[in-house]
Image (cartoon, rainbow, N blue to C red; front, side, top):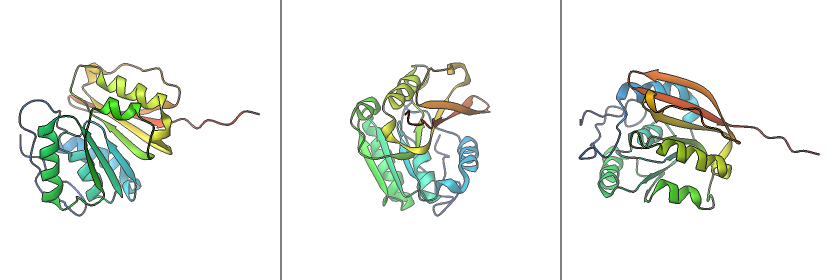
Length: 191
């Protein structure tokens, strides 16, 4: 399935290489376009964490549309090699950081910066999305004050997750993909 391409921004129309094998969950162009239509101009100058990056198509789309910084995380060496190729091919390597690491290992660390958007699209049916969401909820310092966390899953995987710092505020379904949107709850100081 090598028909992935960048939909908007400076690298519009550039084709992306897919990760060989079935270890990643590629997002269709239609869903990616819908996602970035929702994000709109807010992606400009935003910081973006692509947690199970795969081909990197979501983070690369963010860079193409003006995000200032994207950190790509994937533990699969084929995904990392593909991602680096795609960044080079699109000319969007500046502002990108590619880290070969387990997403949960990263989230257990002390946050080294805040992100405006965190994208979670792990391999299907393993409840990894819930684990990642709960890890972020436990460590909200990864998130800027008005950050969004976006989860891409199959509709059958969805369950409500009890969180303390994140609240679900929207869901969009596109065929066999659902995007679930969470935002950081604004907590007020007591006293």
